[in-house]
Image (cartoon, one colour):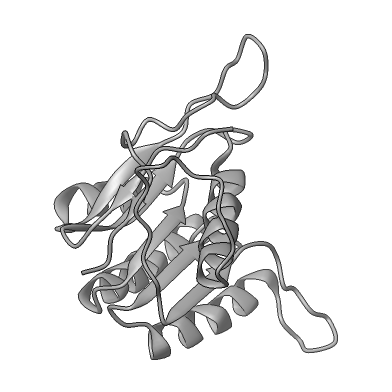
Length: 175
């Protein structure tokens, strides 16, 4: 499934929304894998004109790290991860977060996620974040450095589309 997206100094954080089963998590995992492969010196399956950057940090929050043994609920484990990210993120960081703010009451999760997103944007990090929260989509529309993207869903064939509807080329440009 080809991906087309671009991040640069003016549009560093891509906030991706869309229906469940629309491919958001797959896209996020693909970007993370390609970035780590690139940074490890491996050849990556990208178009010839692709531009990628080296990041000092790549922080990923995908999935559920709930732990009964450590008294961590889904949301508290996500908050713990976000604390680490906010402590160490900077302009040479790529942040990949799936279902930002999930695991708690949507009003609380959305508000906390918006605060963290604002903080990450002020630290000039790069990132791709998936969400269903309307407040984050509105915040992205009103905030420099963050852009909205969306995934579509082919309801006829019940599969994600072949491309996102965000950008025309695959570039992570960190200047």
